[in-house]
Length: 149
Image (cartoon, rainbow, N blue to C red; front, side, top):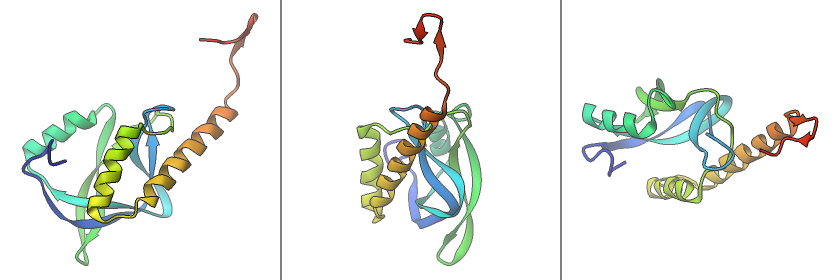
């Protein structure tokens, strides 16, 4: 974040209540998103950003084609405040993040003082759900046997 948005400032830690963290974008090399799930929450850092920072983030996150921006209410110092969140657009498969991508998020979680077991659980759930979806998909074939391409 500091590299992409040099003028951004951390204003505090919070959580997005009623959402879970998942990884989507393909079986391998998936990236983070949040999706509604009652009773769950996702730890987050809140940043104060300037318009130039937001434009930089938009480009990096693939807005509006890959991610959309949603305003969500979070709690900061006992008060409800609005926060902008990049949420992945529909149609992307669940999967596992790359080692480099996951490690980058892991380092951010450690620096923020968040429990990194949370990330491990999100990866495990994403991989498990991806496997379940793959098993549920009908096998495509042809007169000459299973599709090999």
